[in-house]
Image (cartoon, rainbow, N blue to C red; front, top):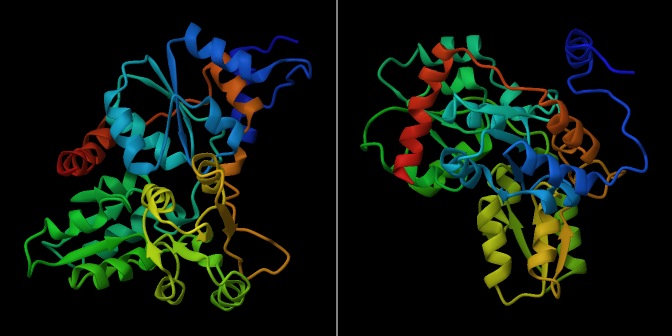
Length: 331
């Protein structure tokens, strides 16, 4: 049955993605490659996606790399295999391009922890403050910011602000605490966090480390302070990848979203990567349910119908673009 544009839009509103039947015999990988070529589309994917999507990506990386890449691509269509704020960032940087996200409900718990109206009231208490926001936030929050950062360049961004000036950091309190320790700068922190990185269990990690005494424990700075205190290395997604490639250890306990293990094993097939345990003992690893909403089927339908598309008002794009460009110019 061929659906009208109105029917397609109705399904999108109800489900967040195109809930259409895909023939079981279809070679989705081949079809996605064909559609990318046919439509002059480029696929940007985050390391936290499933392995089959990572393999199809034209550009695979962390938030900083993907933002930098989104600024450079010449394709008419950008398909973002990630979460909503990432696709929004690509649209802000490329307002004249069509930006697609396979599932509009691929959100972010950290972004959700910072409602724009509440945040506006919060920053209004500190007139003249530099508002530094982690890229894991909505377009509206970016529009209220002085400069944006990622975990890869956050320290450099903070250190670019003259000493003695007031800094508000949002939305991740755990990354903020880590940056206070790293930079020696006092900052006013918004009380937000990522449910994935807060799920890691300090006690269970300590126990696991006894089972693997030669393993290096590495963690993303969105993790809680007590977890970071026992880490052999703390770094961004790309930083963690570089560390496991360059370090001589053969075993690593990894405290970040489990999707990164696919790329780690691919780059270092002779090394062993163990996901750090979480507080819920019924789960062996920590996965972002939002990231995993994207599937090959949704990606195929997204490319075929060029929906769901990211829409932002020109006024919001104008406000949110400035702090992103500031970050990209800083490097």
